[in-house]
Amino acid sequence: MTVQQHTLSNGFRIVTEQMAGLKSASIGIWVTAGGRDERADQNGIAHFLEHMAFKGTERRTALQIAEAIEDVGGYINAYTSREMTAYYARVLENDVPLALDVLADILLNPVFDQNEIEVERGVILQEIGQAHDTPDDVIFDWLQEEAYPNQALGRTILGPSERVSSFSRADLSDFIGEHYGPDQMILSAAGAVDPDELLALAEKLFGHLPPRSLPHTPEAAAFAGGERRVVKGLEQAHFALAFEGPDYRDPGIYAAQVHAIAMGGGMSSRLFQELRENRGLCYTIFAQAGAYADTGLMTVYAGTSADQLGDLATLTIDELKRAADDMSAQEVARARSQMKAGLLMGLESPSNRAERLARMVAIWGKVPTIEDTIERIDSVTTGDVRAFGADLVTRSAAAMALYGPIDEAPTLEALKARLVA
Image (cartoon, rainbow, N blue to C red):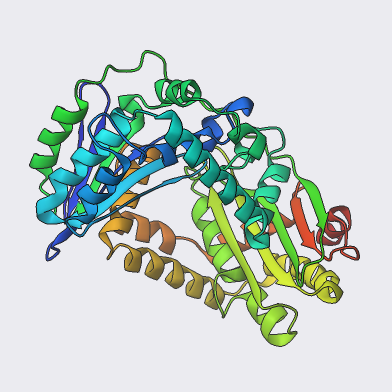
């Protein structure tokens, strides 16, 4: 498997990786703009734009876009995150040129028909309503807002209903003009692909785009922390806690990820064993370490009953404190193995591999070898993980979101006091 990279004269980047033995390929365009690139009055427009990409172009109707890919047995989709928007397809090897042509068409030639805008506006408003009715979804939006208050990074990706209800055709076109320059696009493909063919197609489809004169710089993130408590008559109380972690270029990200896996990354993790298996305080509990360009979040989530929420919250704090002192070499080795296995198993999929290629190019401008990544994971020591845990428990800032029957839940200040006691 060989990774090849090219950059067109206008800044458009191409990265490909052939995977022997496959008859299909995953191909997509990753745009390095997402929710955090929006102004406050634009909140939700990146996601709206992603939806509108499939609603018709100068060459194809919405139905023809779907039929072009599905007639050959393929699959096309998109997603919006806080730092990226991706448009991608999975097709058989002979249909890769068709897939790229469709992707280029929806990105470069959208018509933004007013009737389609209104239809999709209704769809997105339904999506927002569904998210609000899904406690273990909406609680993470609230946690993000508390961690990064009054900042682009803290706002929801879907946006508030009142904003979505007011977006116009001009708003969509303006966001494309601001954020969809060729230097913000990465064509990534993995599987049964021909790198030379893709390079030629990319030059034909994207080479004419004028380069951007001024680069866009998102607002810098500043973790502040805070508490959100929303009382509602649900069956379960939902608890989410976050601390600031390293950004994805920080070498400490590997220790943070190993720590998160050891704490709550599987059935053998500390939080799962102590709070679920030993005490029966919850059904779901996990920890994760996420990262952005200039910050990160170490997050713990659990769902429990109202009368057990206090015990669950305080015992979570106790486990975080204890791990800073006695995280064992065996636990760290197990977490490293889980992290490596997850990486390697995921890369057996061309879709996951294309995603990794695009993200690595966006972050580093190149694709580190798998061997280099494995070496960095293996280099994380027990001391590194304990040190990360010790730093975590002495942080002055934390964020917490609670949802459901949470009247008797401890306050964030009480939990922080217990953490440093």
